[in-house]
Image (tube, helix red, strand yellow):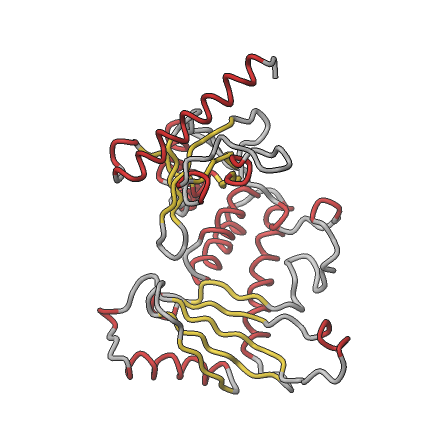
Length: 317
């Protein structure tokens, strides 16, 4: 496999069609670390993730990149092995959401294997056959402590649950054990900030992408649960090439047409609507292609953003 073929395979994992098209259009070349980040963040399941990390390790020529790929393989292998191993004073909770918007069903079992069996039995009981299973189904298995607190201060000592998320056809999407924090060390103190840490774990990496959004563009964001939300690309940044500053529409300020107002402290309501959307999941959308209600929100928000820019220009900002 050539480097270009491998990049094309990894680029195809990016959720945003607009981002993928921009990469192809500009013949954009990702660094080794950026390719690892895309795999880490957007591979559809753990099997694909590990396969691509293995390919990266064999394809990369830089020693540090090859080492990083191997460490990511070891990291996930250790996590999965640890999660499947029962511990004293723990149990496994199974949360089943066969559809994104339904109330989940919950079960308690003693082993990981029992958790898998529980999921299969639940689907059979509900008569959900393979052909009927939703691609957005999620089966979350959590390993939780059963040690009861004896005094108030013990509450803060109860560890967060370890978690394994399975999706369509019970493919493992992700696994996370608190005691195995990242690929570079077994412990990662929660009070550490990534930018002060000397270890180059993959969580520290941003994902630079070629710009494909223009000021005032309508932006769509599709989340993992299948929900799509819309916003407007409100401010460009010369420094940030991995997120977009977007005013989102699904809030009382846009719906109530008070986006241009301020609160009692003089802070514009538009500030409360903004999000820094990763370009990898941001989709550029034609305003004529969306429902009328979304288009109305867009035209209103656009008028507010244009007024904000005009005021800033007048004030010399």
